[in-house]
Length: 371
Image (cartoon, rainbow, N blue to C red; front, side, top):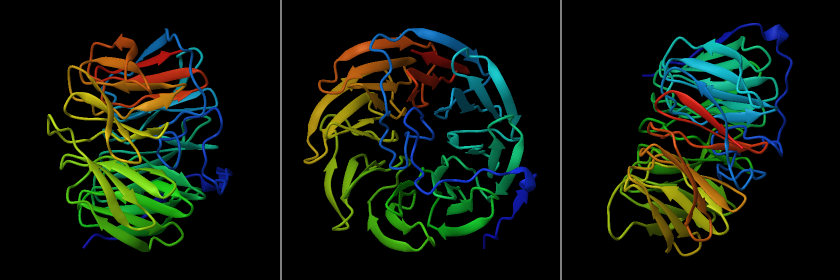
C-alpha cells in the first residue's frame, strides 16, 4: 500500500505568487512540455525562417527533457540533477539548483514566480524563478519522468508509483491523487476542467480537475509513454502497439488507428497538432504527418535513427530532433526538409520555441539556441 507523501514546505511566508485560473501560456512563452495545457506542441509565434546558432551552453551531462522559455530565461534540467536558468539573449548562466537526484525526461513548467520539475528520486521541486532558491518539495514513491502541467492553482504530475498527483502550486500540499494500474510516465493534458492522460496500464483516462474523479476510461490495447494532444472533442496519442490513436472524447471511443504499413515500431514521441494534421516521431526513424480527420498518411520524413523527440510547430515548419544527432526543420505541408543542424550527439529532447528562438538540448550535454 502506497502511503500519503508529505510535502516539505520551505519559506512559504516569502512565497507570494498566485497561479491564474487559465493555466494558459503567455503569448511569447513556452511555459511547459508541449508549450500549452492541451499539449499541442505549437508555438505562439515563429522564429526566423533562416535559423542561425546564437549560442551553446555546456550543461555537463545528458539533456533528456525539453526546455521552458519564459520572460527572457531558459529553464532546463539535466541528468546530473541540476535545474538551470540561462539568459535567453546571452546564453549565460543565471543560476543553478541541485535537486540531489538525477533528472530524466521531466521538463520544467513555469508559472509566475515558480518553476516546477521532477527527478528520478521521486521528488517534485518548486524553485523560485528569480534566484533559484527552493520553495517546496513533494516526495512520491517512484521516479518522476512525467513533466509537470499547470492548471489553475494546481500542479499536475505523474509518478512511477502508479499515481497522478494534483499539488497546490503555492504550498506543494496534496489536493488529490489518482491511482492507476501502472507507472504514470506521460504529461497530463488539460482542457475545460478535465485532465486527459494515457498510461502504462493501457488505458486512456479523463479525470475531473476539481477532485481527481475519473469521468471515463477508454482501453487503448497497448501501453503508452507518449503524452496526449487534445483539440476540442479529439485526442491523439501514440502507443507501443505500434500505432497512433485518435479518440472521440464526446463519444468516448477510438475513431481511428494509424500504423505505418511498411515498418512496425513504437511511437514514443508526443504528437503536435497543426493545420489539420497529427505530426509525430516514430522509432522507425521517421516523422509522420497524419490527417487528423481520417487517420490517413499525408507524408513521412525519414531520418537515420529513431525519433523520440516530440515535434514543435511554428511558422509553417516542424522542428524535431533525431537520435541521428540532427535537428530538422521540415515544411508542415509537404514534409520537405528546409533546414538541419548537426549536433553530433543524439537528440531525444524536444524543441522549445519562443521569443524568436528555438532551444533544444542533446545527449552530449549541450544546450543549443537558434534564432
